[in-house]
Length: 117
Image 1 (cartoon, rainbow, N blue to C red):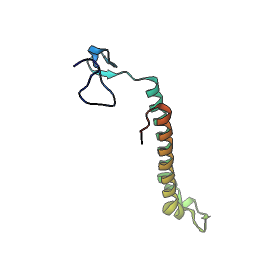
Image 2: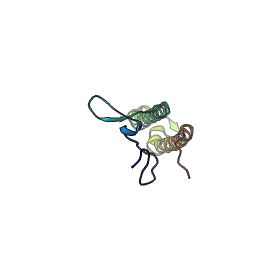
Image 3: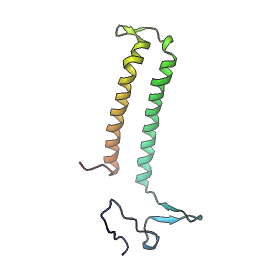
Image 4: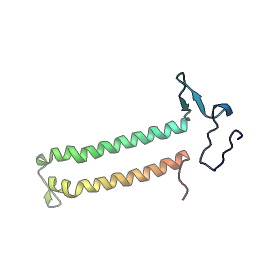
């Protein structure tokens, strides 16, 4: 088989070290793929937004529940601790999911890895 040729159609073709593909061998003989600046930027932004959203999730889930008795004031006619436990946290979770989906679609388009619909 020639360099760059494949028997089936794939999203990418690994040419291998003999064909000058995007592979280098480190000193232990393990193959590692060279990562472009675009790929590094994509994952840096992905990890940053994931970390921020996980922090928000942690605060809403554990910190607010831990201090629920200290949050003793009425919110829409109900005690705030009850509202957070019954409805508020669920609304925040839905907002996190919606924001993440929107942000990742935009990030995919920005870096040229968006799925075709």
